[in-house]
Image 1 (tube, one colour):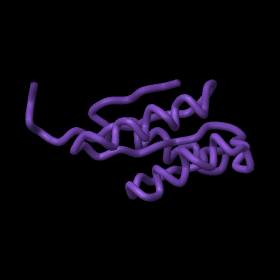
Image 2 (cartoon, rainbow, N blue to C red):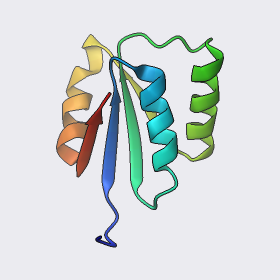
Image 3 (cartoon, rainbow, N blue to C red):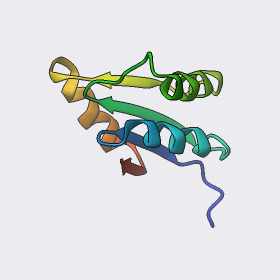
Image 4 (cartoon, rainbow, N blue to C red):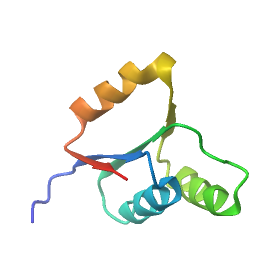
Length: 86
């Protein structure tokens, strides 16, 4: 396996909590992780709050994607070495 640092993008689309969990797990690597949330995310849900706190602690940016900033999602995909859509 390569020792090069990878730029990983997790797109939370259908199973958002699961995508956040996976992104939290990826923080164990020395790679750069970013999360893009497409659509609504219930930030009052305890499971969502827990994962968001973990990602915040690990300095992983979580970006909400909507119609006004959809172009930023395309830019994140192009910049990423690996993209997961969950």
